Length: 215
Image 1 (cartoon, helix red, strand yellow):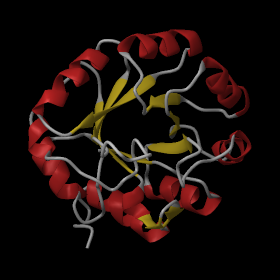
Image 2 (cartoon, one colour):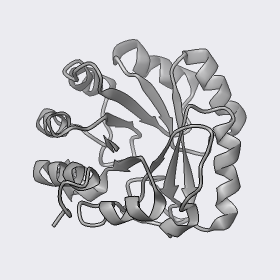
Image 3 (spheres, rainbow, N blue to C red):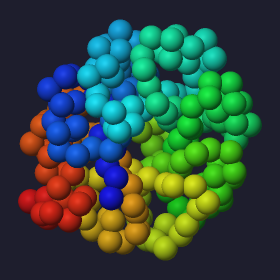
Image 4 (cartoon, rainbow, N blue to C red):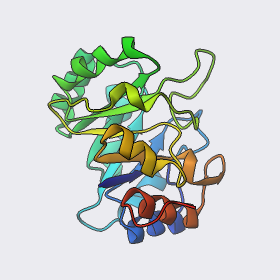
C-alpha cells in the first residue's frame, strides 16, 4: 500500500508524513486553493524530503511557462494534472518536461469511467477522484467521495490511486471495496482548510496499511 499526503505546506506536517511512511508527498500550485504554495516554499520543503519519497507537483491547467517556473526551482519528481487537460495536452507535457505524469479524473457515475481508459494511454499514473460540484472553484481537496463500487475490481494498464473524501476512519473500507493499492488524501487529514494535522496523517497512513481502523 502506497500513500500520498497532498497539500503539504509546512515543514512539521511534511516531516510527519515522511516519518509515518508516506510514499508520495504533494505540493499544490493553485492560487485558489488554501493549500497553495509558492515555488520558493515548495523548494524549501522539497529539499528536505529523503530519497525514495516521490515529490509531486499538483497543477491545474498549467501553461508551459508555469511548469518551467516550478521545475526550474523546486526539485520535484512527478507532475499531477488536476484540471481539464486533454489527453493530448497530458502527452505533450510528459514529453516536454520528461517527468512522469499523473492525471486526476473526476468520477461521479459510470459515464466518467471511459476517461480513465483514455488517459491511461498517455499518462504514467491515474488518480480516480470525486468529481467536484459544477459551481465549485476547487477541482480537488473538497472532502467529497464517490461510490467506490464503481471502480471495484477494475484495472488499468498503469498504476492508479484512489482519492476523494478519504479519512483515517474510512480509508480501510475504501481499500477493501476498490482493491486500491495506492490512496491519496488532503482535506481528510486537516484540522482546518489547508492546515494539516500530524496525528491524522499518522492515523491515516496506519489505517491504509491495515495497522489500525483509524479510530
